[in-house]
Length: 89
Image (tube, rainbow, N blue to C red; front, side, top):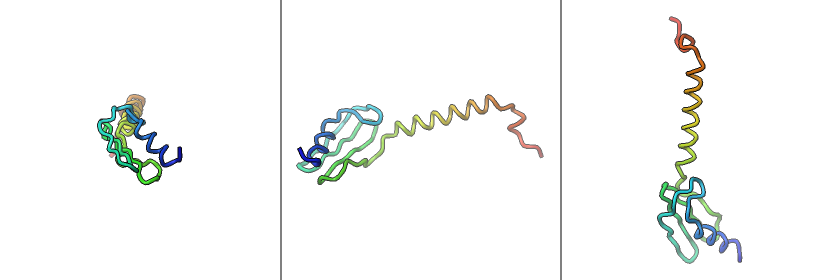
């Protein structure tokens, strides 16, 4: 199997988003292309023998990152005395 055919086969075989695991909702297929739309909103695509690409990124990794940043901020706030957070006039 050549690389272009392998790329098509790999994307067509996806039943879940590779980033978050959300189910695929639509596979748009053609002879030399395939797009996969996942329930999380991510869209992956491959066409004309080119490498697989992301047309719309999965929001899950960003949501995980923001949740982690919020936890860091909460920890910092809890570890910092209240008076140190206020400016002196």
